[in-house]
Amino acid sequence: MDLKGDRVSIRPFTAADAQAYLALAQDPLVAGPAGMRPIANLEEAKSHVLKNQTTEFALVVQGAVVGELGIYPRTADAAAPEAHTREIGYALAQAYWGQGLMREALLLVIRELFTQQMTALWAATFPDNQRSIALLARLGFQYRFTVPLPASLQPAGPRSEAYFELVNPTLVLDDVD
Image (tube, rainbow, N blue to C red; front, side):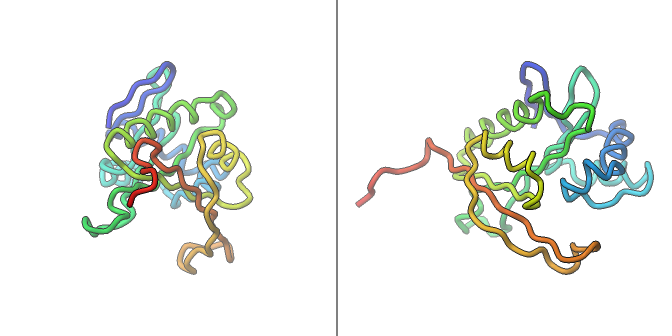
């Protein structure tokens, strides 16, 4: 995925982006709310970005990687209705918060995925992440439900995730008989 907006671009990660990804993953105010798994060193970061090039993308501003966007299939079953949906995730370096950059990036992704005939997009956030919830609301996502995380994903104790959905308005059918 290569997308360009007025201020941001989205592209696949490269090995050269490992340092920027490591900085995101090691910042507790970025990685914690985004649910990013811990990355200990540059080699781990390089391995992660190269292994996940089809689902995680670099958010670039003025040539610098300042965030990441994940676009994940919701099922492996191509016949399932969920095969035409995606779950998105995102993280942005603190220095870039409050500038509307993630909103711009997500709008690019939403337009691209809806052009690919995705019926809906989903996003999960921790219920206390008010910035993320407000962003999703501004983009038109609707709250659907909250679920507890599996125990293996709760190193600091029990947590839940709130799920939000954005339905592709071009694919909504009027009363079908």
